[in-house]
Image 1 (cartoon, rainbow, N blue to C red):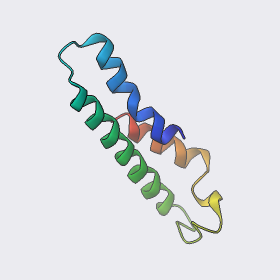
Image 2: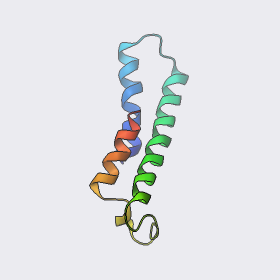
Image 3: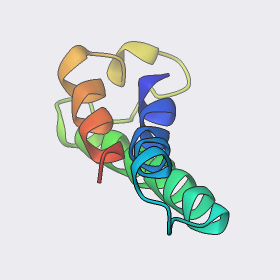
Length: 77
């Protein structure tokens, strides 16, 4: 959940402190941050042993703390 939600932190913060930020830029920043976070999360998950082989069957292949944290850091970009 944090992988998707954290991508809105930077646009929301900028909207409070930067008056030239447009609504389109906020939306684009949030959406692109979510996409980058999901990509980072899945790439990191695929690089571990077992990868994404059982993605639909065994959710633990993507839900370890180190994999999710790297996806969350990707959302801040």
